[in-house]
Image 1 (cartoon, rainbow, N blue to C red):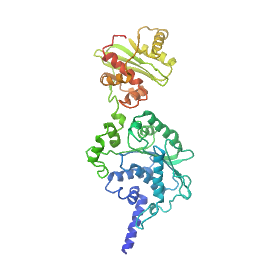
Image 2 (image 1 turned 30 degrees about the vertical axis):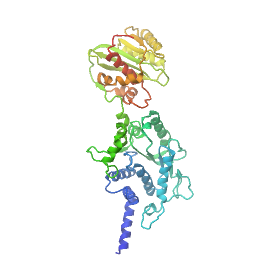
Image 3 (image 1 turned 180 degrees about the vertical axis):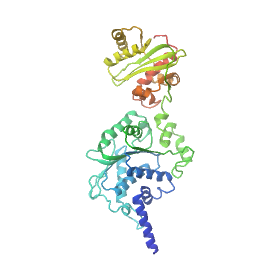
Length: 465
């Protein structure tokens, strides 16, 4: 066999391997980045291929910046089209410019023209997969013989009329400001569930690729949502700095560069960007809660603290709690709701009666005084009880300052039932997700819980303002 024949045989073997193995497809087309010694890229590519070939339905990939996650996503779309030209792939990015860039990478990769006889291009590997002639739209195009095989969109774009067999979401959050903004994260989730998921065809697969920012980001919500739905979810989570002190890949990001990049960052942002630790876990105000099981201790008093809903978007939060002789608080019952006063007034009166509350402190700001009078009246008329002293009082202190300054006391001295997550899920969520900084959608639960700390911790248990 001649040298030329050996060379051609080797080339054909490489092309066949690239058709079969996604990593070697990447390696053959971009050998300077997809090196065989970059083990994390081998692992990432193998996970993506295995997911595609399995019956798993959702793949979530969290990878640090500059480690090739977007590049791998665009390469994967190209490889998938080589496997099956009937696939319909829809990709979503945080704005139209990025979605267009992603689309160009996929389209240009497929249609690359050979400039060097020895160079390998896509058409060498998948010669029958070509872009349909005349499809000029950059974000919506077809393969030869197909119809609307690819659509790139964003939360401000459109997906009308497109059905996807493979949905790829690539980095929806562009900066820390968005990651701290609950409204933005909510909009991302609404766009994903209302727009993108509605386009997914029966049996379709979902891939979400992003740097992890928040427990409420798309990756965090999707992990919980799809697992609760019973879908088969696969999660690939890669940290830049490994637990043993080594780097994920020294060639891509050395320890020295990592230290340099993160030194000027706030710790929670560095942890999110490079370690896939959501910022709200680092930035949460309450980092732990005490719980109790079984028999309750003896109480010197049963109390209630109520923060009424000042505006339509607010929650009413009313908490019954027992006070021990060493001034610890045990939460007995919680009502946390946006229901109107026709519901909350009788429900609060019922709570006070059933737990035999001695004193109910009710913030009288806004409609609080009227609420207090109604609850007192309902205790007498509905429950024939005058055992609870209703104490309306005006709260004049700054809400956020109160919450922050009493947070340690709340964590150290308030005990919640061990199953409080399931008994009062909305209240639990509001307490465990409240941020020290940034935009909190609601503060009614921390506000009312802080009231307990003030009434006990400040020594005002028996004083009535």
